[in-house]
Image 1 (cartoon, rainbow, N blue to C red):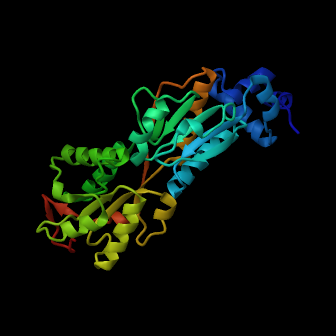
Image 2 (cartoon, one colour):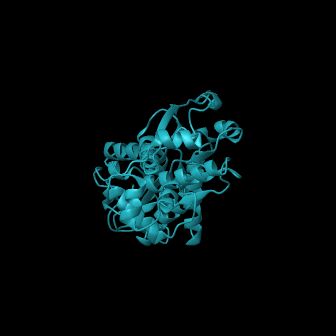
Image 3 (cartoon, rainbow, N blue to C red):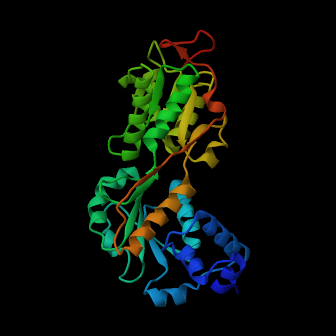
Length: 334
């Protein structure tokens, strides 16, 4: 089994430099860091978590608090796990419901820090407990002033998606997923409105709906119907596709669609969905990095990070749209 001195010899650095790279305790040049990590991978080095734990009085375990598993949760957990493995750490997962007392999920000395994976609908209910947590922590998927948080930049992502539709000629663009109690969807709606106004289009309340059923019921009664729609999440994507088939609405011929959800699932839809792919691994890596900053300082890191989503263009956004607020004469709209 490879040892730190073997890594140091192969990489041409000192053993202490290898230790700094493994622990992130000291700033190391990016070139040296890459060289050391390449040797670590090649020799399949695994830190001795038990020995390190005894020396540092640590458990080499990070607790993760998450709601009952959904696919979104599992993908974020994958990103966290990948980042923790490189540091010789493991995950201890605890599921939490709205009414749970978060401070009682882990026993004293069981974990070195905690990552809270907070869905938009639970943010306000958990934030008070999170602020009072007595271990280093990071919040994922939310932004709270003064707390270390990592999440996708949902507002910027929605702006990019809507501007992509505008670039295709659409001006009557619907929004599915209005929910004032979900901070993620609030951010997406703000991005949607900003993108429209940037192009001289005033958002219209009649084009904004809480779900797909309400959207289609409302839109089909309009004389100027939307030629495109932005869908805020997996649930709205699947329901919109299903209802569109039921009502014989063609995507993208009748309505162009861009969504925000799971890139793997979205690629299997018919037609494949143009989507804002969530940067799960980047979010996990950033969250773990922030947590370790707090663990080294024996507190929680104070900064927050937003990571941009990637717009993956597929067939659902099409190429036809509206001009000057009216549907094109070619094709039909909703």
